[in-house]
Length: 126
Image (cartoon, rainbow, N blue to C red; front, side):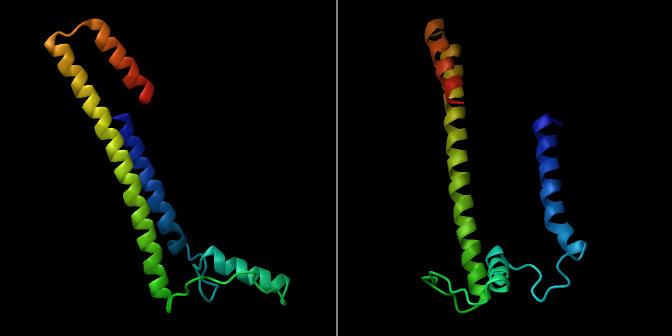
């Protein structure tokens, strides 16, 4: 097993532990809504400190229910992951294409100076 595979497995285990441990340990059982977002926590802390506080702004769109709000948040996260995955896939594909082109140049017997310059440009990009 390669070093990168071991690191990836370790990172996946850490992420899984971060997701499961709060549920398994019962964190938030003493609260009415145990795992609310930071916005809700901040609002309750502000109203405890300053009961007469009025927000400066209001949301442009208020979803009719918490389920729709969660769905919209999940959609936003999925779109962000899709953009990142596309970028990394494109970057990796270009790098692999350059490496294949360099290998073809070496196999066809092109001058060594051209290959060395191409390898330097590939190393600079990575």
